[in-house]
Image (tube, rainbow, N blue to C red; front, side):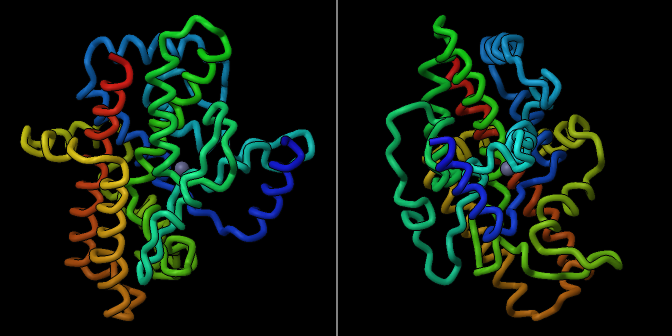
Length: 294
Ligand SMILES: [Zn+2]
């Protein structure tokens, strides 16, 4: 199995230009917002799971763990290759904007009898959120050491992947690896569209995750909380996809303008969209964690 995964990983590394997710800051903001909406019991359980975590890839804090899955994926094995490349596809769901087919983009939601962290490489973020959330619920109180370790992995993957799902270009694709192959100009630099949504727009809010989270949290109304918690992970995927299609790809394709986000009104609109995505991700992450841990 390990040999098989290594082989798949090698193949993937040739064919996939990476869809990387919110940069670190975006993931940290999502967890920092979620933290404001967790019960005291959830917070305690998260801290006690982190205390039992032997990984040194990220600091043992709730906010730092939000970036763990990206570090884990690119960790090098003894052969110098990415040791956990089989988790690469789990970070997104490339639903084609012209011919959307979630089932296909999710590799038909593969059934896997063992631990979710050992699951097949061909799986999508939507399905992995469901799997890891179920596992966290089942194993977080387990005294079995193997199940306890899986609960820790499940928690860290879940925290990261709910963030990824809400980066719209992780849920929409136009034969361009979620915008990775689309070159645009932003503030005198050539970057790709995916990077703009991962990083540039988030950095425009500041550089401190806690401060950004506090600012965004103030904008969240009680009605927002009720509405955003409705639906399933599949519904949230469709929403993120529609955001990618209607609010990112379509305006860009109509304009044919590589300087699109250099226009002030387009940039302000991008900030508005990114804020909502980060806020929704934070609220939904808290909702799942509270459900799983209480
Ligand atoms: Zn990711």
